[in-house]
Length: 337
Image (cartoon, rainbow, N blue to C red; front, side, top):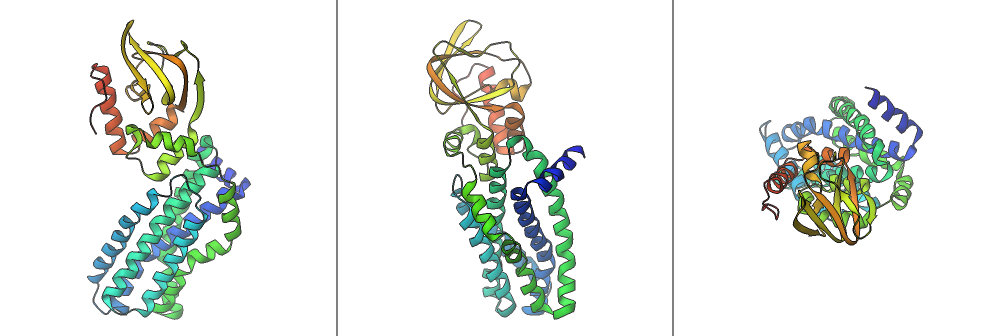
């Protein structure tokens, strides 16, 4: 509860994350409304019966899956235009369903709504990560999740109200207007916020090239890149000492390192390999000593940031755990994906 209250205070004092939190909340108003709107579409517009709401839900989900290919390309890019594109797509497609009584056309339009909504979700969450320091991000997202739940409830109330006031078309068009209204309240601010936000291009490229993080969704990978800290080690400097407590994971950006276990040289590592995952995921002392071989540039991820991302994504957790098991048993290189 204390973390949530701190997140509320941060949003109150910082207009940039507050704006994005509002846009995410508006998105969940739409999601809450769609649960009822798809039934309304099936019965009152298409005249196909309630069972057709299942087909419409499927079309919405397929649209969201199709957006996956596009959201990957958003990694490390400016997001103002994708946000505006997504909002326009959702508005136009959902409003058009009020005037499209043909089932196939309606299915395509609902799929477009799912596509735009998925792009918007990825873009807004990624931009929020760029505007908030990594040590405050967990508190902010705690508040955002609470606002999202409130948005779902509000959306479920919005549809009956709009239907009562103006009928089916009013409900569809009125719900479609939720996101454009949210953008109009801060359209220029979103554009300027995007232009000023820090994009960790170098860190993203490094982490994306690593097998550890290859399966991560776009917002999680960029959030991890935001938390990475550049560190330089000189020739012969000890990076990790066997037996020490582990509190950092390292990604090798430049140079090479020697790995020693019980005084025996067991390997050489270079970009894009990682160091230190064993102590973090197994909660044991460092299992090896790592020494810089010439100048080395590493990017450090503190234990909290590393473990939050790894344990929160099943495919990534399984891979990192397999790497730890392989290296503990002396079976290097890393196991296959």
